[in-house]
Structures are given as structure tokens and as C-alpha cells.
Image 1 (cartoon, one colour):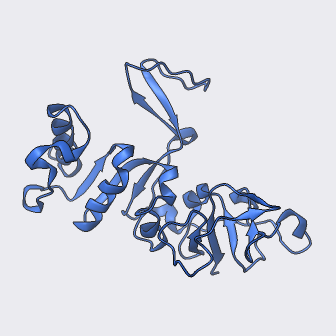
Image 2 (spheres, helix red, strand yellow):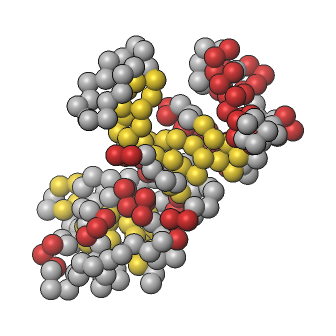
Image 3 (spheres, one colour):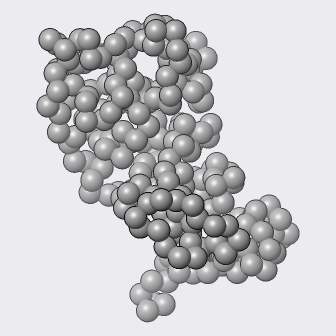
Length: 235
């Protein structure tokens, strides 16, 4: 089993050993092992669950050393500075998600108050968890089927106060006949096909052109919207 799965078992085992040895998941506290030395790492693919607080630094390290990876993270990381740029440039995307968009983690120190039907004893349920990867996955090139129409239903697609783009609250409501800029929820990324859409930016001001419009918050009727990705159809 080990030889068959060595490519991912070995780096995960090293990570777990160092985490437990130094009593912290903060790799900066692992003394001489805190520095990545390519010659000492044999694995070609890294599969792990890095600390969410160090997610940006961890991804940056993987990218710097051109590693292939499949790692667990929170969907809010999509708009993080240092993460969104990779996503926009199609260097990072989402893998297949967890059932119910949530994952279970072993934790003996916290009681899980979740009311979800899939509560598991001795574990806590965390919503918004997904896989981030730079490995090719089949679903990435599957077209999102669109059936809603913008023209004739303009009232359902209000334009932002501060720039030319329409707001869309649910991915399923993306219109098939609109070719302009659209603001969609970050959960759209799970359905993102780079051959069907282009990601132009987001409304949280990270990794944006300071002279462009896509680094500013998006407003509807004077109220700022929640996190949005700005996209445009290319086919």
C-alpha cells in the first residue's frame, strides 16, 4: 500500500511528524525544518490540510517550488491576497468538493453544536470547506448549463451603483444571453470553466490593478454586496 501511495503518503507523513514533534502546525516553528529544501522532498504531489491561518504562506511556498498539490482550505480563501491572483491567472482552482460543502475534523476539545443530520461523534463539522489544487480535474472543462435570460428579465439583474456590471446572487441564475461583466458569488468557482468564462477580478481589492474598477467594493442601492467574483462569458 505504501509503495502504491508513496507520492502523497510520504509528504503527509513528514508534515504530521513535524507538527506533532514541535506541537504546532506553524511550519515556521519547526527550526531547521521550517525551510523547504527541494532535494530532501521526494514526493511529486502534496496532499494535506494546512492550517487555515497559514494557508496563504503554504500555497505561496508550493507555487514557488512548482509543486503539484491537493490541499484542504476554506472557500473564503478564494479572495485572499496572494491566493486570488493564482486563481485569476488559472494557476489554482477547486477540486471536487465535500458532501454538503462541509468537512468533519477530529477535535476532542470542542463540542459540535451543528444541527446538521450528518453530525459525527468526536468530530466538528466545518462549513465552506473545499479542495484547492493545480492538478487537472475533469469537471474543470465541463460547461455550466445556462437557461436563464437577461433580456426581458432586466429587473432580476440589477446593475451596481458604482460600475457597469450586473449582480447575480446564485450561480444557477447566470444568464445565457448577457455578454457584459457579471458579479457572482465566490461559490461560482466550483462550476468555473476557463474555456467558458474569464475571471476579471473580485470586489475585495486584492491583487487588483489599483487603477482598475475591479478592486473596489460593489454597491447595490447604496449597500455593499457580499464577496463577488467578476466574470464574463467568452463563449
